[in-house]
Length: 213
Image 1 (spheres, rainbow, N blue to C red):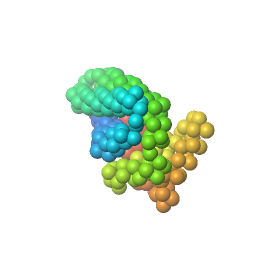
Image 2 (cartoon, one colour):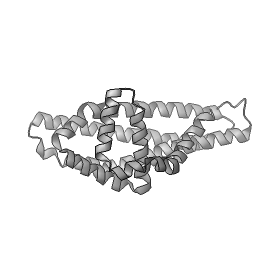
Image 3 (tube, one colour):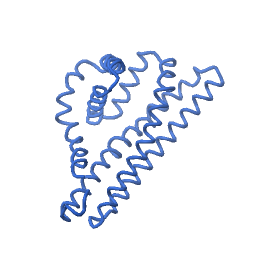
Image 4 (cartoon, rainbow, N blue to C red):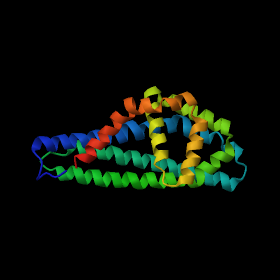
């Protein structure tokens, strides 16, 4: 946001867009997922600890799960701090908002990247060894149910678009195959409609914030 080139009203609009964008990422997306993880995903994982008979593997599993929980809490804290700081930024000093955004996004990006790498490298293979495809599919259904109709539909669209943007063709095909196996056909046929009615309005918030800079 360039304070020298924009009017006070435009600067206020820029800050509002940034705040809305962060609220979407932090409140709607991140905290929404964290609630489902705390109530459904983590308890589901912990219930399978008794299936691990090797003590060293069991300790490694507990260490991994605790690290993922720590990263979740740190990401939530970073996001909440960003929202709080943005609410205090004045249109007279828009650069403060820009720096807050950059620092917070960098922090969130670092935490999220570490978590995804840990899950891809260790957690995903572990889950495959502890639960059948049917059990994993049942878990996915429970998670979608916990998210609620609006939120789950929005996430499904986001998941599908993320798969399409995967650079690795082999991994993309694997993810598409998995998506098609786990998501019922009728729901997949509704993705274009949900994208237009539910996802695009939310994504527009982020595009508007980005284009205002």
